[in-house]
Length: 457
Image 1 (cartoon, rainbow, N blue to C red):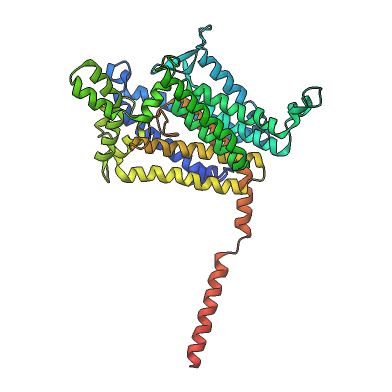
Image 2: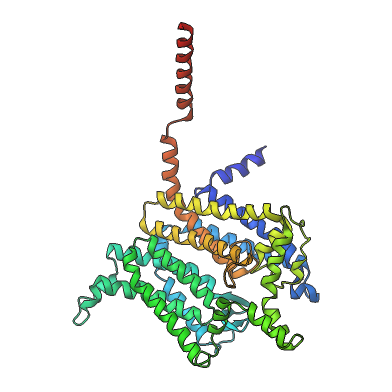
C-alpha cells in the first residue's frame, strides 16, 4: 500500500495538465506495442543482422531519451525561457535547410543526406536527423513569438534600426510583418518544397493557422496567401513549359504526380507493356498505399489480433508512414477509435489550456503545437485511408522514427510546461464552482415542497 501511495503521489504531484499527461503516456504505450509487432519485417530483422528484441531495445532507448527531454522541457523551462528560445526557431530552421539544400558534405561528422532520393536529413556522427520534424515545432514557436512581439511592438532590432537614416521604414508595421513573419514563412516553405512538396504544403498550412489563431486577421493574410498561390502557379507553369528540365533534381515532379494521381497512367502502361520492367516499377510506387487500404478493409471491427498483420510483409515502412493502417488491421475499428479519441481529446484539452493561459505567447504556442500534433495525426489517418495525396507524415508519438518521436516529446514538454500556469487557473475555477451537493439539496427541497402540496390536496 505504501508503494502504491508513493506512485499515486508522484502522479498527483504533476503540476501540468493531467489529461495531457495521460494522453502522452497512452500514446507512448501504444507506440511500444505496435512497433514491436510491425517492425518484424524491417531489412535488419529480415536479413538477420537484428532481432526484434534489438529493435525493441533501440526503441526503449529512444523512448527514455524522449521522456527525459520532455521532463527537462516541463520542469526547467518556463514561458519566459521559451519566449527567448522561440526567437531562435527561424535561424535554426534556416541553417538546417541551407545545409540540406546546398548538399553540404564538407565535414565527415556533420553533413546532409538523402532519403528516397530527396535531400531532407542531416547526419550527425552516427545519427540521422530528419530536419522537417524539427522545423515544424521550431517555426510554430518562432511565429508565436513573432506575432506576439508584433502585437506588443517589441521588434527591438527593427525599432532600433528605424532610428537610423534611410532605415526609418523598418519601424512601419507593414514592413515588420513582412520581415519577421511572412518572409521567414515563404523561405521555409520554398526550401522544404525542394525536398518534399507535401511537407511544404503541410508546414505552410500549420504556419498560416498559427499566425491566424495568434490574432492576425484574415484581411492581413489575403496578400501573402495570394502571393503563395502565385508562386505555386508559377512553379507549376515553369515545370510544364520546360517539361521538367528547369526543375530537374527537385521533388516538384513527384509532388505534381501525387496530386494528379497515377492510377490512369498505370492502366495505360499495363495495356501497352503488361509485363515490362517499366510497368512493375510504376506498380511498386503505388503498392504501399493500396496495401494500406487493404489492411484497413481486412481489419474490420475487431481486427486480426496482435501480431497477425499480413500487409506488413507488403508495406516495408508500415511502422512509419502507414502505422494507422497497421493498427486498424490488427486491432480493428475499436483500436482505430481509441487512437482517434486520444488525438481529439488532445485537441479539446488544448482549447481549455489556451483559454486559461494568461500569457499571449503561451496561448499561441500551445494552440500552434496542439494543431500541429492533432493535424498531422488526422492527415496521417486520412492518407492511410486513401484520402489525399501521399506524404511522409508519421502518426505523432506512435510511428517508428527517432527524430519524430524526440521532437514531439519536446513539443509535449513545452505544452505541459505552459499548461502549469493554466492549470492553476482551472483548479481555482473548479474550487470556486458551485458544489454538486448544493444542487442536490435544491432538488430535494423542491421534492419536499411537492410532497407537502400533495398532502394538502
